[in-house]
Structures are given as structure tokens and as C-alpha cells.
Length: 117
Length: 111
Image: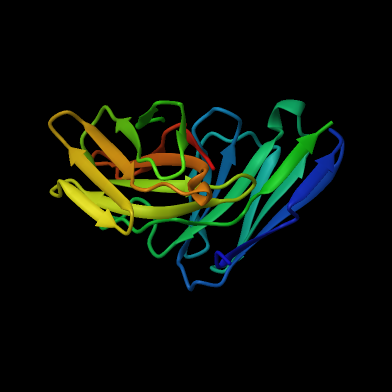
């Protein structure tokens, strides 16, 4: 068990659908992240939340909308996605945000495999 | 932006052999981290080495860091089938302290 739980594990959605990805961390961490992982490409950082405040949006299209109601929960709301958005979406948490001098490792969930048809 | 680049992209070895993979990066770093990802799972943090360290061990893992060459290596000794996974290096830049991942090395350990 990683301490970071993501649901659902798999999601298939049409381009006109609206769906949400959920992430919950049980580690008492202060920072949470959304990453996109596509085949043969480096992980792409999407959003960073620190103490439930968004501190980074890595030029992500507005069809992806994050929400962080508290330090333990993170959502990614999806609407009018494109087939190229199909990927593994990973949530992660850390004790401190990644721009902290004394960097702390990330703890990842097992991801949501998203397929956009 | 991508900072670390792993080499090779893929590696296939026999159980019991050692596996070595390398990571090169471009800018000065605060620290470098290695992660493992099993198929269909998230990444798991393996080891963190700071810029003033040259070598670090954790169980069967040995990580070296050469800041003059801007490179790091991960050695897995006496590999097991369970070591089959993708391995990623991630660097924390001294410029902005942001974490950047490479594209990974896929390791297959044959029984």
C-alpha cells in the first residue's frame, strides 16, 4: 500500500463526457501533485498544491481542472478531452513542496489509466 | 522540462546478474533521485543522493553521482525477477528547485 490512493484505476470516456479523478493521501503530507505519463515520455508535471493552495499550473489546457478541498484530497476534473489526452494520470504527495531547498521524495499513487475515445 | 536522460532505454539481463543504468543531466542540481515503476503501478522512491555525496547504498542498490560529469548511475546487484520494472532518475535543479524526470530505463530480468 502506497499511502496514496487513486480512483478509478481505469476510465474510458468520450470526448463530450465529464468525469473526475480522485486522489487521497494518508501520509500527512502538505503538498500534492498531478502528473501525466504518456508512453516513452518523461513524466509531465501538471499541477502542484501546497497546503491546498495551487502553486503551479504547468500550462495545462483548461479542459483539465484541479480541485484541492484539503491537504489530503485532490481531484482532477475532466471535460471535452481529446484522444491525445489518453495517458496514465498519477497523483503524488510530499512532505514539502518540490521547490523547497531540502527536497523530500514524492509518494505516488497507482494512477488512473485514462482512455479518451 | 526534462533534465535527466537515462541510458540505456531498455536492458535485459539474467536473474543473478547485475544491472547498471545511467542518468545524465544538463544543469546544476541540488539532489538526484531514483524511482522504480512496476507495470501498471505508480512510481516508488528508491534513493536520494545529494550533490555533495558521491555514493549511496540501499540494500542491493548502489547509486553514484559525478557532478563534474553531470551523471549518475544506478547499480542493482544480484538481480531478481521482481526487479523487472522501469527505473527513472529525477533531478532537482539548483536554479528553481523543481523536480524533473527522465524517460526511464526498462529493465527485464529473465528467470
